[in-house]
Image (tube, rainbow, N blue to C red; front, side, top):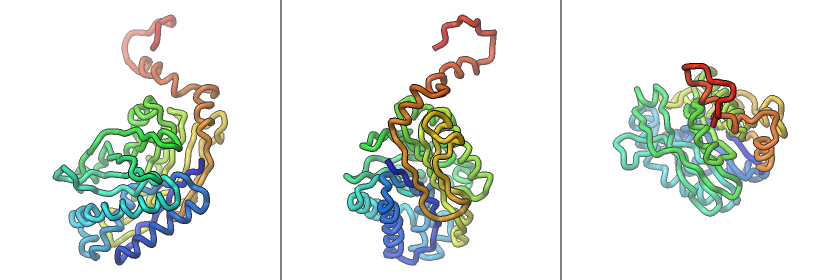
Length: 298
């Protein structure tokens, strides 16, 4: 299949028509280049706040409500686009007020037939928990789709091995890692985490960041990153683990062809068996008496 990771600029869109035109053009571009799965970044939906005016967009709290209030329309638009072009879309994540008093950071996975499901961010960054007061929502999900078993680790989540491991143990083949980072260090942390998850779990990870400046938004004013698609540096994949990668801070799609059979093959025949040997690491990581060489490890 052909995957597309967005390096997505956040623009001050003056009205809904401008947003619809932008998203439609991005989806049409990727679909026109053969993409079957399109991944937008974390907090890419914050540009919706500007439709309510610069005052709303420029206020942290007001921008949360402004974006959340437009998500139903944004989701409906992207469902129409997914159906029209026959693609799967991971929408740009957004703060969503639902049954909670504070918003969750939520991404929607859409297929040609409609909404497949939602994934909420699991672990909040310091900014989210100390300044923005975004809360953890629903648990990790596994999405069964015609193009593979998919899991989603939103930005900071990709830096935690046990989350990726939980997805891999549930049979996930492709992990989507949308991100929003305001400095090279933050981008690098997510990039290293995404590559590590691909190595540990012998799977493909799609990293889609926000890029460029949005000085009108105190939430996402600076954005640093490069879109990429990673795999395990082993049988059937590039020796660097980098299947495709764009230039730093360059807006646009990064696309790559992957074969689900290649994921199954590297897990069964690779030079190393990171996925299968994980239980041994759990045993060996336990401090204590020496483990006898002939111990029966799980």
